[in-house]
Amino acid sequence: MLINLPYPQKSKAWHFRFVGLLSILFSLLFLLSYKQSKGSRAVPLATYPELARTSSGELSLLTYNIAGLPQLISSAETPRASSIRTIGERVNAFDIVNVQEDFNYNSDLYASNLHVYRTEAMGGVPFGDGLSTLSKYPIMESQRVAWNDCSGSDCLTPKGFSFARIQIAKDVFLDVYNVHATAQDNQQAVQARKKNLAQLAAFIKENSSCEPLLIMGDFNAHYAFTADNIREFQKEVDLIDSWVLLRNQGRLPEKQENFVAQHALKVTDDCESIDKIYFRNSDNIIFKPKDYLVQHDLFSTDSGIPLSDHCAISLKLEWELTDL
Image (cartoon, rainbow, N blue to C red; front, side):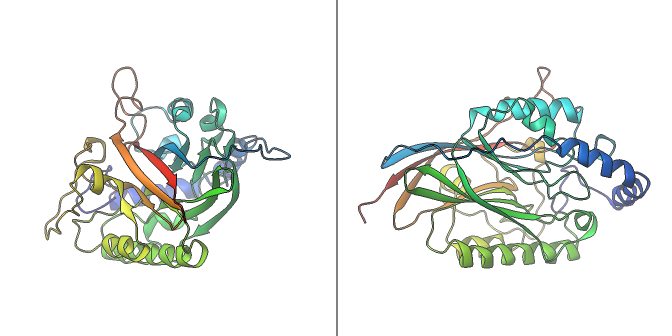
């Protein structure tokens, strides 16, 4: 959520309501989070299957903030349990999926989902970080990291980022990050978000140095917003923005002093979204992105109502091993 940005924009009144509801329903949410997360883990395999040895391939990717806050405080228009159950089924079309705000309906998300490898949810509000990764390829290791800095209602959950090392072919690995940065446009939130990205960059340098990267998530940031440091983050980690490359002629949007972002559900293929898909080549793997799409129709009801308060962003990413 960003400057003058109805995602929908969460006002101060919303924050007070949020805190009040949490206070009143704390015990209920505890039971609910336990109930919803119980049985939602993927069935672990005793051994991973042997993947084929190949020098090239293609990945279908998706990032999606699914608005999984409890129904009473969700800003999405459609009923959360049934909508998230539908989302879980429709993401089956993609090889690797990062979702954010997977809080109180994880069991619904996973109910009809066919991805063999899925991270285990931490629980509902206020215990979980809302980050889940679903993959058709083995997740060899994973880690969750909470932000050191937060602001407002974002401090009510351990919001942050997650790391997963995914094997996409025999002896071929990809480091996948799932990100949900601090929201809102006030000074404290902007400073927290800048520190979020600095923390993420430091972690990547320490843990994924020289590795091929895929970073997908809700960054709550725009290049055009002068107060954000998303440009510096991209440059520091040496990332390629798939939207910039494929839809904006390789040019970052110009900074604007009075920037007003597009409404979250009005985002199109040709305008920047806060939900981003980055990638980074390595000495061993070269990526070629294609077919960046905002998936409006796939993640709407039959009557055209969006299943979340964000749009889902997809990308096809070809990969090829180098001769090095």
